[in-house]
Image (cartoon, rainbow, N blue to C red):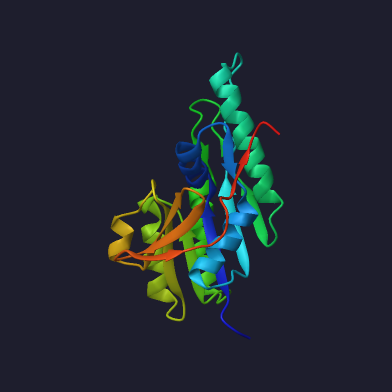
Length: 199
């Protein structure tokens, strides 16, 4: 059997980053994004683990909130339709609205799947440095696993790039490009992977 590669996506962080870049009218089609990411990295992911929680809806939502929730719905729907995706949905605290169960699930999967030798290369797509400890533990106890960090251009985990090879995804114009740590750029020939929400 060849090298098994798993991609772990902090979906809430990824969604926030893509919303920051494109606003409420457009969203990334996740299957296209994965295809282009694999092409740019010259690697194929055996599984994509996607972790998120849906934003809570207030009793009397504003137009802005409704627009955000609609965009989020279409984005997560595109994620669920993507082949090889294992979709994990956490929840939001009823009191604070804060996400619960997502970060700990990402960290525990990173560690447990590496210790049980389920993958050889793990790619973590996030801008959240809180996951570094899980990567350190995994590397310490599972010598046969190599980890990489993947970040959107507006959600960069600077601290993580000191310890792990880091790829920065730039979504500019009609092309997606990857910047590797130390700024080696890999351009992609694919068209922009953004869809209009008004469909």
